[in-house]
Image 1 (cartoon, rainbow, N blue to C red):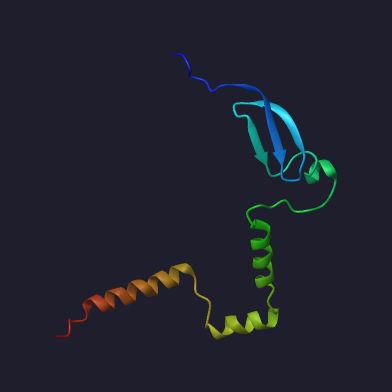
Image 2: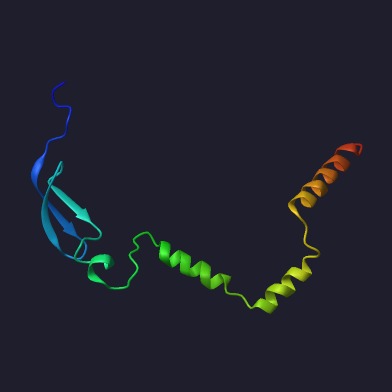
Length: 107
């Protein structure tokens, strides 16, 4: 069972996207990280969003799209007709399916 574990390097150079570098022990010789203790808001005390995959921007776009005039929203609901429960919607769909299957095929 020799060589089961990865090789350990006592000096692994870690480079952050902010430019900070430091040395740790790791199974690789170099690492690149997005955030470190020099730029993380928890350690710096700054208020900023840390987002690499665009999740914050996506959330802000959804929030902006959700801000609709309340009067326009009520008018839209009234145009759709009376509100139906899920049970009523299912019942209507089942009725439509049954009535479609009972009709004779047109040739």
